[in-house]
Image (cartoon, rainbow, N blue to C red; front, top):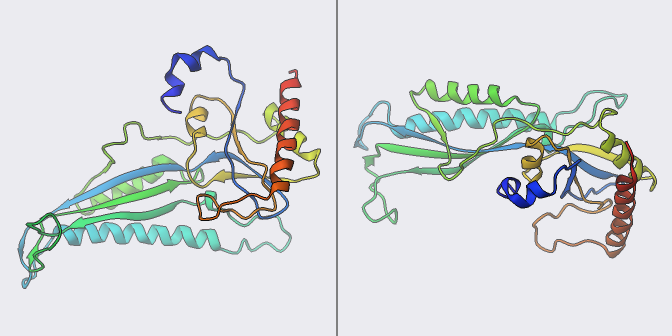
Amino acid sequence: MERFLTSDQFKAIQPIAFAFDEGLANPSNAFTVFYGERVPWWFYVKAEGPTGHGSRFIQNTATSKIVDICNKALAFRDEQEKALNADPGCKHGDMKKRKLGDVTTLNITVLESGVSTDGGKTHALNVIPTTAIAGFDVRVSPNLDLTEFKAMLDEWCSAEGLSWYFAPWWKDPVREHYTTKIDESNVWWKVFRGACEKFGIPVEAEVFPAATDSRFIRRLGIPAFGFSPMNNTEILLHEHNENLHQDTFLKGIEVYETILRDVLSHDE
């Protein structure tokens, strides 16, 4: 999608009012629509330090530095997980329980260090390595400003005299949050919501917890909704035995027909 948006084919179909992208199922009777998504950041932290024999107390080793970074990252991860599972504390239903898209997830997906002479099949466990690398997968919620998140990473690393860098293969990281308005100022939101209401099905607006092509579309200023009319359906995205009941499938076609009819007949 990112390449397509710079192509002549895309330029030839302008102007575009708004776009639809994939959504997720909803185990309840409601439809879920996504108006934004968490920004993925994939990055590494590399630490360097002195070597020595494993029987000594070597100071400021690469592994000790990278462990400190990981501990800070895991503490942040714990804060976010607790925020996700926290009781909203309101007895009158004014506050909704947070969804995954409302918080930022962080996972350590790479840990690399050690001294090896056979490509990592075995390691010299009595030798302190001079380098250590940690890789991270972070999905930043729109509720956390990316400038603030970057500043936090810089602070973590500067305390150890280190720096972090985006994955080298990632040429154009997203550095801002892009969301679509879901209020009365967005006519397409009103048309979409009205079409769903014809079926008597409530609509729950959320932030998509992972990443979809719509992030590139929204970055161009084009409103985009992530929507799949699959209510009363367990979320089995990419899982074994992912399935959809035939009645839900057929009803989804009817829903999309209604939405597209209302959208295409709308006259501003």
